[in-house]
Image (cartoon, rainbow, N blue to C red; front, side, top):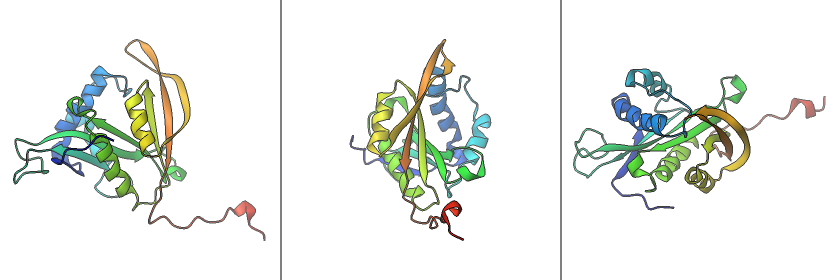
Length: 200
């Protein structure tokens, strides 16, 4: 894996990060098929998304800050600091039985791709999730995207299936491959026995 620069720090995302996070995401909306959103967002439109990822619990938003150092390092308040990526864990599906599964994603600023920022963010995200009652993580990767496939494989994801031509963007259809990772929770309750197998 690439070596991460020492001046990159990870912290929970907060509302003061919203404009920079929106700009970063809008690059992928406008320029790539890596997200299937087709219209750029304003920060106000992205505010509910940010607020749906609190600083604790299974649904997190972690932000990578790059700074030249000094007293504002990692706070986002210094002129030399900038957001270079973020990672999220979000609900996989709305129905209650899915609550122990999350969908994860990571986005890096274009100039930060290939520097190990995604690796740093995922390490922090999965460490945080180890304290939550989360059993599986899923990632949907629009194809082709070999760097993302390699990143997820490095974290133990395995390919479980592909939706063929499931989305249309830029005048063509795109496949999405799905990847799954078992999560070892330090706090999950012991599984109950299957009632259908219990003798009465």
